[in-house]
Length: 412
Image 1 (cartoon, rainbow, N blue to C red):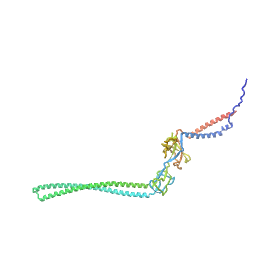
Image 2 (cartoon, rainbow, N blue to C red):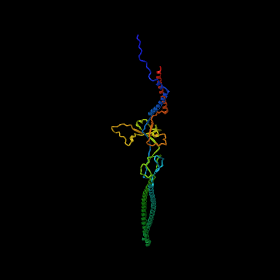
Image 3 (tube, rainbow, N blue to C red):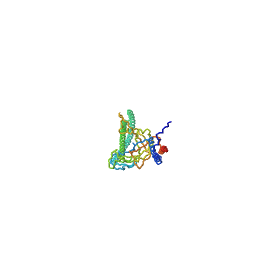
Image 4 (tube, one colour):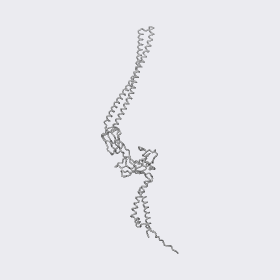
């Protein structure tokens, strides 16, 4: 009976260096490696959660309402009360223009206005006088009419007496002298009646003449009143120009780009300086692909390069209705056959919640990096640190378990 020959292959030996494995399993290596792994996991998990729930861009800048200061009149600068980068407050004097010419012009306009006012008062007095004359003419006409009526009654009575005297004369009842007297009375009454009527007509015409003069005076009153108002407006305009010789700060802010000195002759609308208010915000140009979940009111952290990367709490105020390129000086024209799609950037306005440091100047154009939280899920730093510790503990346990298995395999 043949027995199986012994195998020529020696038994397999465990691979690896037991001494090296023992060193890897020692606390001198495990603890530093665990600490390094925990730190890497902390920052790695933080970056992962930040990427999943935040949107950030480095194409962002500080913005503000820059107020340009320009004169509303021309003239020679008499004084400049501010310096470059000086903090000014609202209604503080900035620049003074020589007021001599405008003061003289205002005085001349005031003199013309005084003359117009005196003329207006004279015309009003004349109008009152014409009203009195019209009333007097009316009274005189009424008196003349009454006198004419009385003369008519006297004439009628004289005519009746004369007719009776004629009958009596035919009967020789009265003398020729009495008849002649009655006839003379009739003639006198006729003459008086005719004179009274003519005077009444003349007095009526004087009423019409006085009324016509009154109407003309009223028309001149309107014209003089218009000239008076015009002169008053000219005075106000001259005084307004005189007030423009002093330029005041319209708001609180820092003086920048000052380009005026005493003695300069300035023109209307010439920019003298700018004032940058302390109220600033961030304009962040996000890619259009980053706007899917971005909404007004979402919290953000803004890192300001000028402050060494210090971060400030903020929030999204609004998203512009259109890309920045669409509102540029030369908008892109895509109605061609060789169109290439380019990811557009959309300006997003971000307002600060934390106050900015007063000892640093934060002005328009400074670079910032906003980080907007667009996801509702967010872990605080302590939770990320706890998760990093748990994962580190698990990794150390698995590592030591594997090392111990290998070390056991080397034991005889």
